[in-house]
Image (tube, rainbow, N blue to C red; front, side):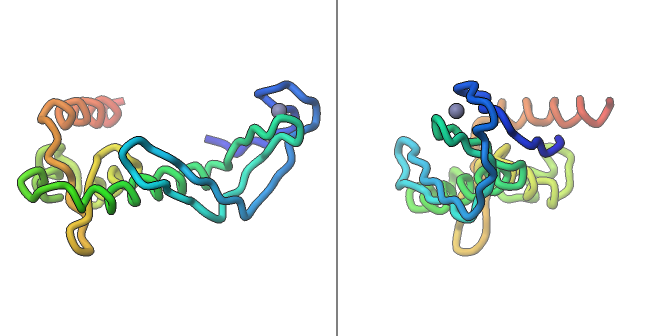
Length: 141
Ligand SMILES: [Zn+2]
């Protein structure tokens, strides 16, 4: 993915309305979660309608921060038997432990915090199977 310099607003169509801004905070509200604020973001924003497009880096920050924060909030309500350890997931998906952590960062595997450690949620088998198919599909290209 290449960083795009936005000039015209893709939302309202205003010409030359997109201005680069940084140091932006966004608050996300998800059903069942406390509001999550992500700070220090950058991107292009429309001076006419306010629509914004975050930079690739900021989009990644948002994804990882949201999954991380949800994991912290979930850890208060998830029971141990719902969890599975990273090693087991790595084995199940035939990937490295690092890759499992990466997939947690990318929001592909849901997880919760137990103390300082992240534990994937056991989830239903089928979602791991789907993930497995996708990984191997990509690997064989
Ligand atoms: Zn606009």
